[in-house]
Amino acid sequence: MIANHIHDALGQVRKMQELILAKRNFCGYSGTARALGGVSALAGAVFIYCLPVVHNPNSYLLVWGIVLCISLILNYGALCWWFFFDREVKRDMRKLLPAVDALPALGVGAILTVALVFNHQYGLLFGTWMTLYGLVHFSYRTSLPGANCVVGLFYMLCGAVSLFGFNDFYNPWPMGITFFIGEFLGGLILRRNSNA
Image (cartoon, rainbow, N blue to C red; front, side, top):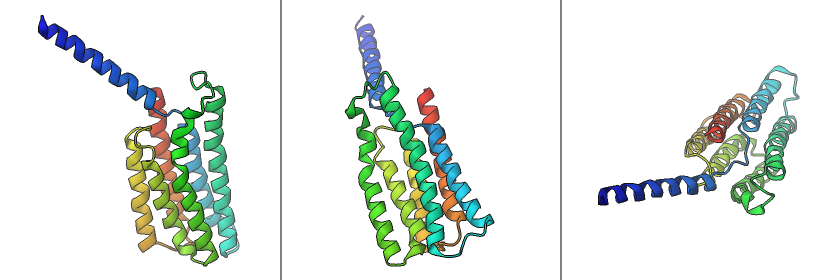
């Protein structure tokens, strides 16, 4: 009889844990939007490689800036759609806190980008972007699936390799392929999480 009570109590604890984890789970990001952001990075690399882009930093920065804008529109557009139209969210600003947690690392990335461009250190941009974007993934360690941190490690590893070895700003493939793989895998993780 005591064993039955203990078994029932453990079952209730498991249900409470599942409820708490479900409440902590952040569903504001779209896996499809994220994967499309990765496709835009690969398209940017293809564009630079195939089309006669003027071989100067400003042209390349323009292409990567457009890729960034496309990704921001896709991802934050999906986030806004979720916030305003998901019935469970009820436009509660607290539901956006996981997205706000990423802003410091993204802000540092913007500051370092401006500093590196100002000092004509274009070769360090890709590695800087990759490592800091990898760091962003760790701000979601309690609100997104654990596999998201593995994607963050992938970005940081690629960024370190880029900073110390493949830091040619005029070669678009490391940037395009890294962000395509990372965002596509990240999108799959988010889609799997939203279907769970």
